[in-house]
Amino acid sequence: MADVTQSASLASIAAYLKLTHECDEQEAMIEAKEVMQNLVTMRQKGFITGWYFDAQGHLELLPSEAILKRINPPK
Image (cartoon, rainbow, N blue to C red; front, side, top):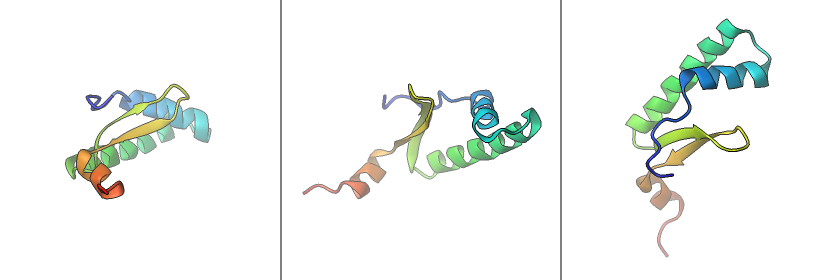
């Protein structure tokens, strides 16, 4: 899965927000744009390498190698 860079599109994030937060189409798209902007910022800063929806429909983040080393330092 490490080569995924963005398999959750703006439209799919908006649909997810609409379903889970019971908001209308316009509000869901506004929120989805903010989520997407934050995901892109986290990728640009090197925190994550990508994001996707898992089999249960949860938005998952792929942490970068640098972050994984900070979370789980070698022993």
